[in-house]
Length: 365
Ligand code: GLU
Image (cartoon, rainbow, N blue to C red):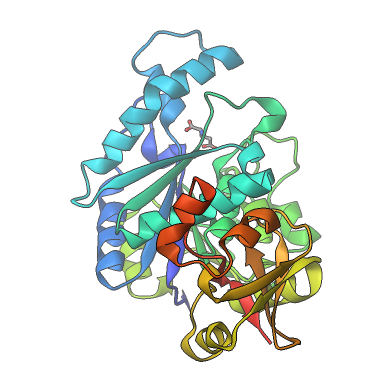
């Protein structure tokens, strides 16, 4: 078996585990997974869940036609979402935190930054974020559409190092194991290319090879950003024993580099610099020597017209010392430069964070 190490994982749990009968949330397959989550957290690791099941849970409470309309499904999601959350909460002593996202939230820069901050904050308070698509408000092009891809976006925004997709199939196979008994499991994928997509079935197939198409898409998004991706069978209790031992009892899609390297490349080369922040030598020292985030108190000057979430260069005495994503726009940062954290709210009339550029969103030069 392949081995893996991880520190922050997004675990995507599909309907096959949450709602095995197609309606109603069930705990049947969740106990081993819940134990894995608890044990991992006790070992100092961080977990974010992406869970399906709201529509299935809603369906169990009200009668709808077999072919429910979009509006009916949205209503089912609204009725079922809290049941799905409650289904998870009963497994844990720590709080579960509901996070509902749409594709539009992930595309909008301000909301993206807010999602990132909120996930950080939830983890800091030792709660378990449980992410689902906000099906009630999103339809068609506003939707990510499936929770495999939502899992990938969540891993990216949360800067996870690992995405674990729990399904009812052991991993990626050479053919569909439900139709072809010569099919064998592929334990390791070094690079996702057209052959791998070919194994997953065409885009148009509803289920592909065990719903594999969206899983490969998710793995593709993640691995190219340095996030290793696993597909495992979450219906088998032994899967989670193996994962706890650092073994991959399914398919491991190798990351193309480390998340830190991928992020460094993205921040350094892909992102256009939208402005500059001049800092004092104390702030520079805190960034370079202490691994600190940049606070408004160390900022002397703000140059350029940037928006929240844009990339800025951090300058000290004429030299570029870092580049990162700014959590305030240029106008507001100009107002709070040099100010202590406790004064931000009174100057701006609001406060989202006392950090101007977070450590996790910064590369040092
Ligand atoms: N968001 C959907 C639900 O909660 C599930 C979508 C999916 O599993 O891909 O029912």
